[in-house]
Length: 251
Length: 251
DNA sequence: GCACAATTGTTCGTATAGCGAACGTTTTCG
DNA sequence: CGAAAACGTTCGCTATACGAACAATTGTGC
Image (cartoon, rainbow over all chains, first blue to last red; front, top):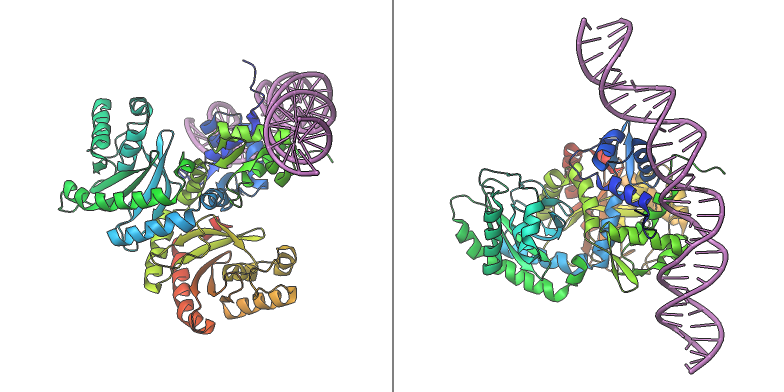
């Protein structure tokens, strides 16, 4: 097949190499990057050395890790979207009122991508997710909402990893599809212990391609009790956010 | 001069194109990207279309903007450094105690790069900076601390933009050097209205290559009064952070 | 501790992918 | 409305990138 002359395969390979540094391992060697990307070790070597020269990676012995400069790429996107001026203060205000951290997420292929969050001092730290973190699509409340918004949720359910995170994790595609339908029907997702044991996640739609969510430790309360408390607050927050931000930038 | 065969010039050009999207303009056209990078419009076109194909940019008419997927690159760096589990909760706790947002930054060439921050509901929003935002090196308290830590601050002062942001902005290299020396001598930086009118910025070193800072509206207080209040809290926070994180990852 | 196997890193001849001059299209301006 | 300016696209040519083969390092078994 003739190459698409509008696309630079070298650059595409380089982006794949950069994308390898997803936090699963702190440092990666050339051979491991070659395995993860499927590209030749010599090719990977040139691309990695280019990332070092441009300040995005640091070499330590025979391994490499990301440097803070990659954050500037995120900063450009957040700045262009006015996140610091509009989204963050709004999330902070609503999170304080609610008493729980609130997270804004979008779907990125088969995963949930955290786009903004208001952290709260004293909130229990679970997996320590930050802006840019990827969460599973099938077993989080944010993921359920994003699936409910998708054109072909059944296809996404078929392709997304169904690896269970806890004993409660749904793995049957039909059960997952039913959960997504329930999410769409009632306008919010409620996930009880499927991703983090003992944690209830609640999420609501933000526009047509984003989700807003909060999670709370289960304790002795009922999941439905948490939902009736948290949903209205998330929905109010979502309505205010939808008025003040360009949601089209999130797709 | 013969090309360095360890470096991929195509990938380096691609990274320059990606780096163009720094938030100064929400959307960029091919010609503007070519101007900013100095590369040929045809080259830029191929690189931009590759970024679109890989999901990092979206095309709207004849312009392009970053998509949320770039945040995942930041997420990988934050995850590998354990920011969500260690840095963020610590910043949140100290920010709550202090009653002001706290920001962690490093130097990235001639600018300050925000690496983590704890925002606070109700804090005055000034320029709406977020993780990944770039601030000036010469006129912010964070920048003064980072200059104080540098091996050749005089050289950085000579090369960094000296464009004043307010009437109070220092522009004389000798005055800037003296301010950096004062910062080093007393162990903190105090910047009063040089970057944001009416705002006092205070910053302290975090290890040898990072800074921790807070800013407060001046009001009727004295800058020194704010400093004596805020410095000890920032220094306590810095000491705790230095114990729990791998500062070497921030260079 | 050594030899060999396995793994990882590097070199350089070759050709294909990327470059950019030239052309085509769109927008701006008088 | 037409010309100039600006911007986007094509395709012949060659220089940059590829990866086979080799070099160096690490791991393993005895």
